[in-house]
Length: 288
Image 1 (cartoon, rainbow, N blue to C red):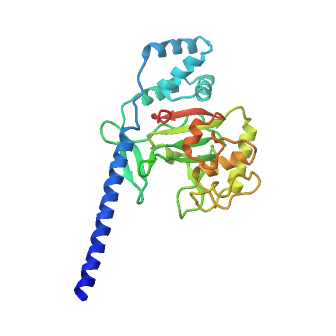
Image 2 (cartoon, rainbow, N blue to C red; image 1 turned 90 degrees about the horizontal axis):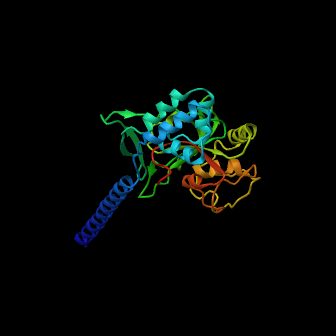
Image 3 (cartoon, rainbow, N blue to C red; image 1 turned 60 degrees about the vertical axis):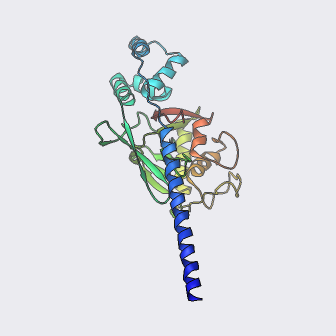
């Protein structure tokens, strides 16, 4: 009887070991596949860029197609580009272009059991950071897709509540309450975007940021936020996750920034929302 008990226990251990090994192999394979299909290098187009520079120097307005070229060559959206031009910082635009078109490598590391985070390296293997955003304001939304788990590039999102101090509010992970984060910590993500609600006043965006600061810190993390609780713009949620927190800050003021209007809200949704404009991007985040 004792031998049978030992044999059964050994089989259980073997099954658990094989299951864990299989899981790790699947996880590794999915992670490799996710990394390989994520990044597309920006292509330099000096001919089109020279025409844009000439227009800037002669104070000639750009067409929508030319603004698309600006985005493809610098990562700057219309608002950030126009802001730098208005400040006379065409030299800074060239700096952004040189960096955006430069060759970069990406390093993926595991944080926790499932989550894989990515950082940027130069062609010498040294870790580097993206330059600071050209124009960041209270109420802006930061999104990255450089975090993935089991083949799903779910990413992360936060809302800027004090641009001057570089503070945002975010819900990080299970077991942590939503809290302050620093905008600078987003600089090492290979794929990151700064988004802004269209056609909204600076004052309204600041009001929304203050509401988030006053009401959406200290909330427990829940992956199911919004799915079970539904959409109630008046009731502060008792729990949240990163995209849900950002979405609710605006939804409380009657602005629904999720493109589908459903209960499941992800960082990827913000990149497809017609209510949001792209201020600036790094990497091929809009192509994923």
